[in-house]
Length: 398
Figure 1 (cartoon, rainbow, N blue to C red):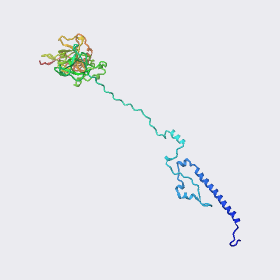
Figure 2: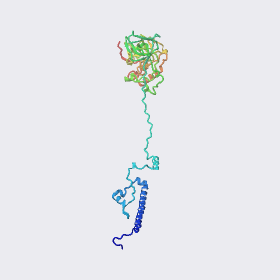
Figure 3: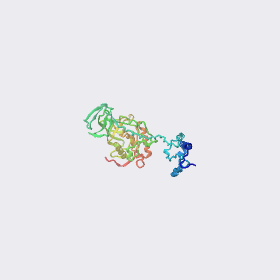
């Protein structure tokens, strides 16, 4: 036993202390390596896709104090830090990691996942409005001048002469005829642009050339006939067999209507009486009883003819004049209707054939048969019943 003041020899204490120091140091180094290895291993491990896509809050997240306590564990060498497992916070789906190639391939291949693209559809063709049918301007030609031509007037005065145009020259009609110094004049325009007035008696209307190309049979399409003034006045329509008007006919202005089949006109500057070919109306002689339906026929003739410009067509089969010196003609109205045929078709005249057949005989007879079948005008039982010799009781005033 050592007494007070006695010391242990240093030679014995140094090896023991050195051993403790060395042993403790080695233990600490080994423990440090182990802890470091565990920490590194936990960091290197890649979390599974399930953990990424559907993270669940861990106990440490639910209780931060428990997490902090679990990170420190008491040991023989004092408190040590437990391995920390990285925890992923919940992340919105739009911020998740890029999907794997297999996911990309599936999203591209699956038509349900892609937004459908509407295929362009062909627009339905819109029916274009039909352009309006152009209306042909009425035209006249210089006629009835015996080859001398006629002066175009700057006004309706005879002395206001502009330029001489030869026979056959064509003009565009700019409006209706007007009275001037006792004659009818048409406002016209020449092909060179000159505008003026042309005396009606030296003109002839040029009809549209389409009329002959489309003949219409009344039995099949009676509605094809154009509306006439008779329809407007409540009268039956005339025959749909109106033939095409010949070109370049001489024109004349009506002065007086004598009766249903006779009229007086100004032709070539002279007064001429006309007898209309192919028709016959009840006579109306001064001081004599009128034939049945004679007043009505004369009134209808006045309605259609008075003050009008007629275009006169001769018929070589009938001669130039009758035994009374009247000019035998077909009279064409300004609207293209044939006056002779109109009177027969409406029941105001009988069809009449003299020694020889005339040009439009077949059409006139067919129209007369239709009027008789429909009991129009003088064919009606309430008027004459088709008896041209029936007379009225009242004489005609002189």
